[in-house]
Length: 288
Ligand code: ADP
Ligand code: MG
Image (cartoon, rainbow, N blue to C red; front, top):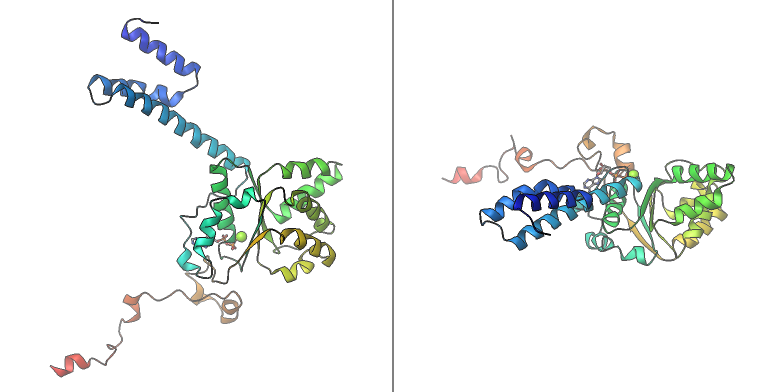
């Protein structure tokens, strides 16, 4: 298997092509130069080539899986400002990111007014799950129901439910924003029932459980849904202000602000005191 160094290098390159290792191929020459100059040991070089190749593959896998999961945007837990949402226990959320809830097939509920980060957190947890190699599917309740209804019309409801059951984590966003179409609650119940104790779910809603009868247009279906979805469940009730509106709260009419419990953006300390007399009326200066 020997030859002149350049013949060996050519063979290594061909083998890297055959093994589909484009990143290792790309950095081979520069790595070999490092060895020649005595900057890199042979062992380090091997390590660099394999690590770079694996990183490329891993990134590609995550990118593909994120697409498959239909996550509407890539959000991260690191990008979530917990200080803005004090009603949310950061350590409980971070514990979720360890993903044991997926193995336990639990239902995680994120409940709160618009703009409080429910979708953000559900996407971020979806991203964590994808990175950990779990299969994830993200959709709004309206989309899930529309998909199930179409499948039912085409006589393929069972298959569609089986399809939704294949994902380790199903994220159902926006429960309560739109009225559920007639029969939709029943279809959703069939899906929830099929996943019950088998697969984890994250559900986000701007409405409390007491309103599910109204949302699903059927108290019996709502009760059956909640029976499954609250059995092995983790509930996060977010009682905060809208992150979307945080910079514009002072422009909103009072009744809208109250309803959404939006606080005006805090005035930065530098502005707060501008033009006002010092706290003690400037007494310090007067004394001297
Ligand atoms: P909800 O689903 O509760 O209506 P979103 O998760 O869609 O709210 O949040 C609205 C926007 O504000 C998104 O762009 C989201 O990334 C951002 N956001 C919300 N809360 C926070 C937060 N605490 N820290 C950082 N970004 C946030
Ligand atoms: Mg949302």
